[in-house]
Amino acid sequence: MAADVLFAGRLRDQVPQTGLSHGNGLLVSVSPVPGFTDLRILTAIPESTLLASWRTRLLELGTLGALVTVVLLVGALMVRRQVRDMAAMTDQLAASHDNLEERVHAATEELAGQKDAAERANRAKSRFLAAASHDLRQPLHALSLFAADLQRQVRVGAGHDLPRLAEQISTSTTVLGELLDSLLDISRLDVAGIKPEIRSFPLKPMFDRLNNSFKRAAVDRNLSLHFRRTEFWLTSDPVMVERMISNLVSNSLRYTPTGGRILVAARRRGEEVRIEVRDSGVGIAPEHQAAIFAEFYQVGNPAREPNKGLGLGLSIIDRLARVLDVKVILQSRPGAGTTFALQIPMHRPSLRELPESKVESAGQVHIVGDSADLQACRKLLEGWQYTVSQDESCDALPSATIILGEAGRADEIARCCPAAPLIVINGSGLALPHGAHSLPAPVRPAKLRALIGQLQKTLEKSIP
Image (cartoon, rainbow, N blue to C red; front, top):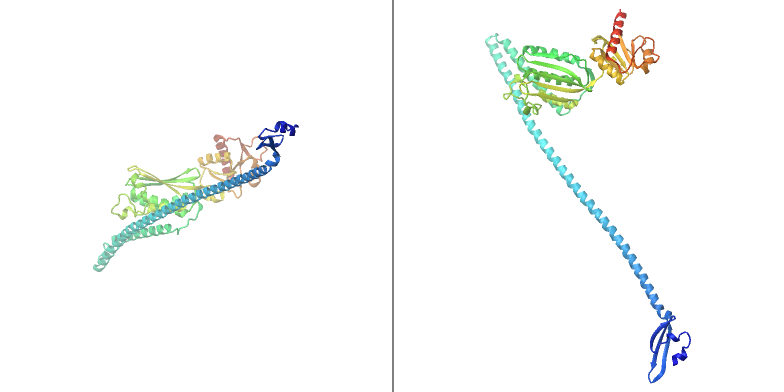
């Protein structure tokens, strides 16, 4: 009844008979008073007042949780970065370790290779000295015997054997001199003491000199030795090239049976000249072909007879080829002869390099320019035995020279060489200099040859 009296207003429904109740933002507590049935103790407190401290604590806890979460996230990122860096460093260390192992392995293999090379060189040197001392001892021993025989005959006054002894002494000194020269050449080549003097030179005079040098030896051995005529020019060291060809010819003369044939010829291979020395000799078996370039290596001469050479010619050729960067090619079969070939860069001589007095050909043609049509004309003219020179100018041309050029340079050529016959390629429909002749491209060989022949005859008639 008291509750009804006291809270007859808006809180009346919120007041319990006993216990707790809340509503309208209040927390209400009703407790009976012992001994008084109708007496109650009522307490009403706003909920906001009661929960204020808990909200503050909850906010603090939430803030602390957020801070802890941020710290944990930042720590996790830092730990992750450190782990990644450590992993990268571990990979780098592993790579460095592998690289170091590879370098150590490569260096070890290189040292082992150098050691093997040094041991092979030492063994080769021992073999070289043994063979050299053997070959040197033979002519020296022969010289001592011949000298003793000569002294004996002088003492007894017998002179009928003196010519024979003189010839034998000369032969022994020649063999000894060749051996010493070869040994010196190999020694100088091995220590890089010979430097090539690269220049351009004609091959024909070299062939002529070698032919004159070896033709007597070929006749004495009843061999046919032929140097095919050539007009090629080379770019190399002429002394070294001549030595290489000379050694090849000498080798062929030594191993070609009586009645055999030896041919020395040159042919074009692209921008190189291939010089071939072919013989109809005994040939070289495949198992010996890789070894014949070693010093003192000879096939079929175990007794090292001096008349079969010293076994140094091909070794010198191999060293000279490496100095000149020349390719040496060997083709041979037992009983079918042998072909040695040298491939040497070709040189196109200018007109100034061709002595007029030594040009023996169907005529002299000078080409101004380097177009495809002019190159095709050059090949045709060379095949017809014309002496062809080529340059970007036409200065200082010898007499009786026909000029071949492009239409675009016709006026320039005519001003430079007004008296020379001029043939112009692709000159149709253009105003050409007086007296110039025109040929359409592509040039027909028959028309070119006919026109060149006609102009050559005119030149020959005009020259007194």
